[in-house]
Amino acid sequence: MTPIVAILEDDANRIREMRACLDQALPAAQVVVFEVAREMIAWLAAHLGDVILISLDHDLPLRDGNGHPLDCGSGREVADFLASMPPTCPVIVHSSNNYCAPGMFYALKEKGWPVSRVCPMDDLAWVQRDWAARVTRYIREGWIQL
Image 1 (cartoon, rainbow, N blue to C red):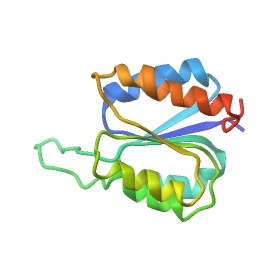
Image 2 (tube, rainbow, N blue to C red):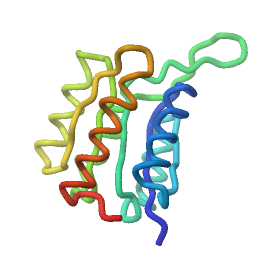
Image 3 (cartoon, helix red, strand yellow):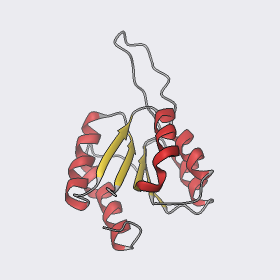
Image 4 (tube, rainbow, N blue to C red):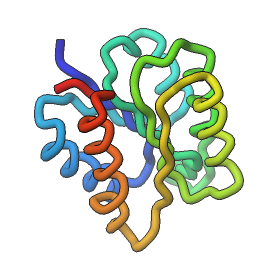
């Protein structure tokens, strides 16, 4: 079985940085990225047992070619889905939305998921400094088996 990391993120630069961190920390892992919450939920319903790490953004402000907003849902929808399931892997909430990210964090924590929060800042420096450090901590603590 190939270990899988599932990420909900709509920013290409963030995705690139996260992939680079995972190439170092979890080189054997397959990285699956979603920009739409309901697509991630449908995929997780079938693959959650293969996932070793989930990372969730809250806001997904995508637009179509004409600049109209698309309904991509939010990370809270994915967090609520996960909270309805038995915990299987660690989760990182990586959102700067200080109103909604705590709700995602506590919804998962209350259901026993190993969860942490990282707040994006300093352009992309937070990915290498904070997000990658959380991934490494989960490996060190045995939540992610290599």
